[in-house]
Image (cartoon, rainbow, N blue to C red; front, side, top):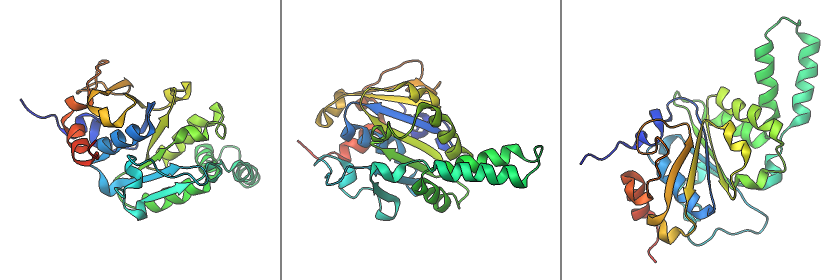
Length: 238
């Protein structure tokens, strides 16, 4: 029996900028599974996690175990990722003053939407998109930003990351919100106990038409060789 290639799980190996939404009930299990899916791309991976003041990583959380190099890992507070709406409005006013009405409207749109991104995101994109391969920018505990991003802001925010040349992966713990549909790929991790990860399943709601996750399949994590291998090696024993 042949072992499926890893990038069969994420079509094309994320060679082009892609948006992915990963959701489930356990933040720890979500982090493990997301790391397993992205294991083939270590040089392109940048991870940001939203924590509350004074919060510590759970003992099983891989983000507290140094699995991601410090220069590619950021811990931020929710308010650090507020949209820069004023900067976007100022750019629109400046563009209306300087440019003719028929001059590069698409460029203006892309610029103003980029300037609306949180300053942390702007800096991360600027420092990570220098190479030819699209960086993969992960944001976990994204559910903590729900009140900071109205539904009308989701699509232009995601599009701004993609147009800047970066893939965006949002990791959302809790009930899956309707806004997930904006993303190209939507994955559900069904399981609540990281120690019992072999019983958890992974299914693709949208965006993957071939391979082990296609057609509504719900394989157990233990049935996905690349994911199972990563978790077997990394998950602390019970």
